[in-house]
Image (cartoon, rainbow, N blue to C red; front, side, top):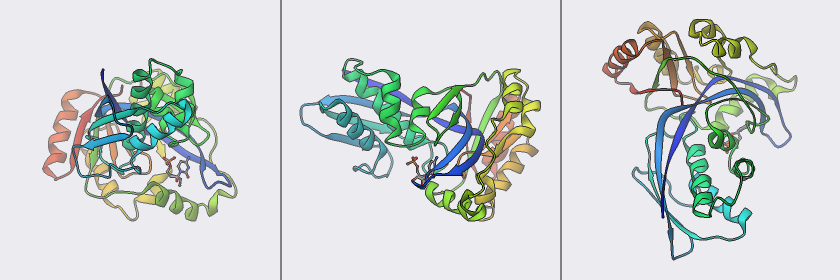
Length: 287
Ligand code: C5P
């Protein structure tokens, strides 16, 4: 049996840090949204034991890859490992703040569970996923979720915005631990906590499907940490807004930037304008 799975990227529509744990991890309040940009993974059982990963781009495919780490976590939990060959078609930019690695990990857990006769519930897969990465449980659930804890405590959010999305990214890449370290420096290790209220105005406007009412409430604390060393983020946001986006913001720890458009024609024109500036862009939808 061959299992083929789409691993969707995510963007953050809201992201605040509420505190720092002794473990070094940060408590968050974030609205995460899955989008149609995706990697495609194909899984097949092998006679030989092990995880045999092949990617179509140059990237580590050893035990540091989140696909391998997710498989190891799954087999540790099930106690009955089997061999798998994984083909990874990579489309989500690496180290961009779009959860590409976490989504590949989530796809791996889903695929192994399917190859293992749907042995575990989605809740069990989420708890295995949380040991692999903070965003993996969200990537398993997908859709629009208000996430708390380190990202693993989820509540669905109703999102009725019918817009088109452009993702813009250049050659810069950001390491997530380095981005958190810069936030720690800016906020004195969050000794006094942070913004911990849920973004109720944003969530009501999302429910109402009112993009313009959402616009002033999109927030990402990481912009302050990343924009000084990656000025392209501000440039892309301005380009997106100048070309008709109703809102534009960096996703996660960056540096990918999203722009939200009310209609497909404006988004398509904006994509052409950004492409002419040499920015890599993806036209996509919420999903
Ligand atoms: O969980 P994940 O491996 O995706 O996290 C990568 C790094 O980001 C962690 O090692 C940690 O430094 C940081 N992180 C954090 N707080 C979170 C999520 C991630 O400090 N809630």
